[in-house]
Length: 144
Image 1 (tube, rainbow, N blue to C red):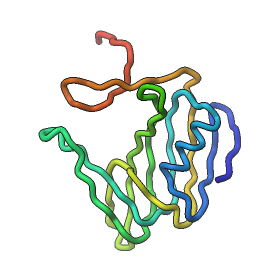
Image 2: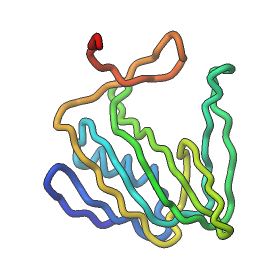
Image 3: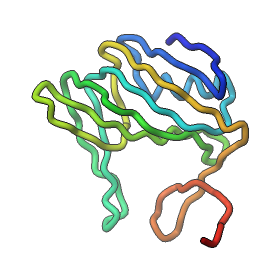
């Protein structure tokens, strides 16, 4: 992985063969990123994506072998207890220009991945939500 510190965060370039989520977590831990948002694009292969079934309260996973264009990677960085959590969604395009999307569990960079991490400068936390069963961001409530 290559990176550059820029105004508001970090610009990353993951290289061929790197596992996306593992690489992001290592970077976050090394630079002690306490909270942030990320966007990216590139190309990946051998992906595992998830879809949250709100009725059953569980994720359904599906593997996608082969190579895909990453048209969008969007996510955030927060902490569950003392561990950083990368919550990432990805939109892919196959060789027939068909879109596939979901929660990113696993993917290997097949060409490159260019990712911008915008850091918040404060620690963002997650906590279990009783209603959904998900670990949601802990934020202050505002009446609108």
